[in-house]
Image 1 (tube, rainbow, N blue to C red):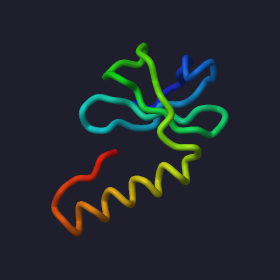
Image 2: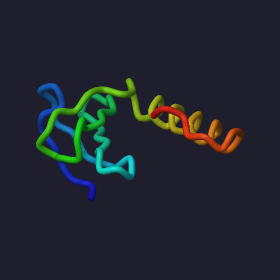
Image 3: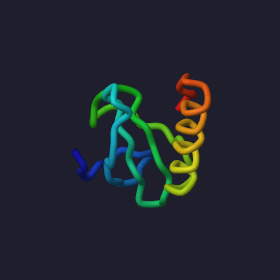
Image 4: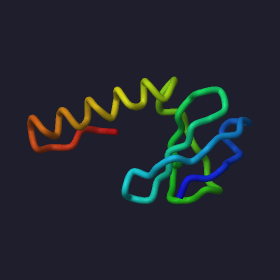
Length: 75
């Protein structure tokens, strides 16, 4: 699934994952993490984190919430 991508607000990036529902996550050349609006490499992406570290911290928080409550958080 990983692969190169263009169209991240004029930047290039690398797709590195999925949310399990088809939406893709990509790391832009400037370090920001983006999520696709649909399950397509050709559709628009929007920024969800300022850096990969920030993205992983958000992911950890959602996992912690799920472990504590049994309910997934918004991600």
